[in-house]
Image (cartoon, rainbow, N blue to C red; front, side):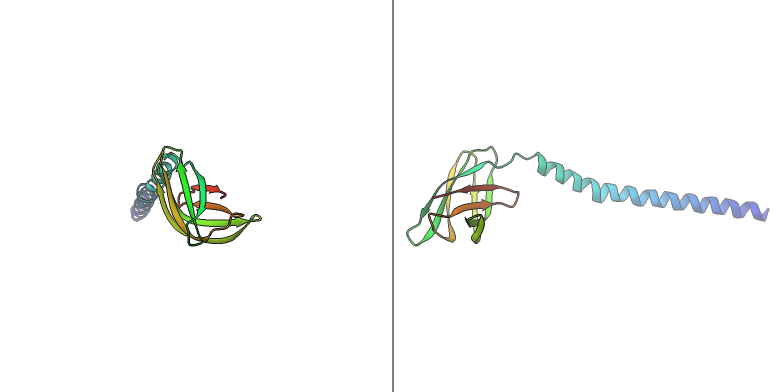
Length: 133
């Protein structure tokens, strides 16, 4: 009779171990994986920014003033500006520009104005707009 109880205890221990493993995996999918996937899908479902640099001018003190037109249906946010010359970044700087759909807005960059440079603005969600003076 002693052998039967050892087998029953071993089977019960195996069953408890499997149930705990299932609970841990289920908890991982509910707490970690699914919310991350949901955020990823929500981010991908947002409409993309569609903007264009319509003008770059000297602001009077030697810095570039960049005008952006948002031709899309979502807000465009830009946080970096690059001056490109000959295919390479000649200078870079920070900028904060938020352009509502259908609006034109401008920001003065921390970069010098140079008529031969291409100015490229980028944003945190992959927004890109570029143009020349």
